[in-house]
Image (cartoon, rainbow, N blue to C red; front, side):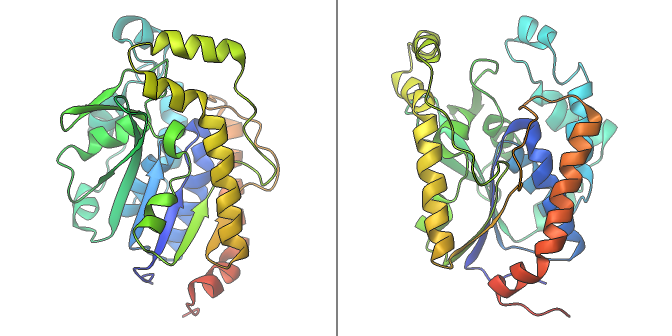
Length: 290
């Protein structure tokens, strides 16, 4: 069933915690619930791309496979290329040789699909849309390129990094675009708030990004940006404009988890939770079971 154009699906990132998002999206896809406006950050952008292409199970496979592959994630990559995660491998080699992606369906899907990044030059949120960005796979890579351990990615003449500092939960874009409702998939439990940035981290950030003061400040203020966003989403939820799907208990895995059992358990948690929330979601969306 196609969802009305005035409802957005918003997907949080969080590195390998994004496998929770993958579980949610796979259950939505199996239910044939198709949003016409999708926006994601980092791993949420990766999951969103496979949701748009209809590749059920592919995000789960990619996260598990790639975190075990030294071709994708390794200290050697960081040492020799300056980036821990090899997105060239993920975006170019994997879809052809490891886990084929349905590019025909991805490209022909009429849904609007945005990815969120943080601009290196200004530290602000920048969004790229599938149908209008000539380097969209690079935009997805940029959205996932974590500060400190990733090189900025050049997209259409400018450099970008992970969307996390500026738009970890990229809900503000669809609200600004005038959509009336949002369905938000988060990768943290309801009680989670980002702690205050440590002084040592502030010093490190200012030194590391000394040539990019706006980006440095965005990274330092990421905790406040995130916490303010969560409070605003909760306000929209109370108003009946937001439907939130998130882990019900604290997520204990980090952004670069390699333990396959833990990853698959978090995927299943997302899948099962979405299963249980389907009736409530459909009421929120105003659709009936067929």
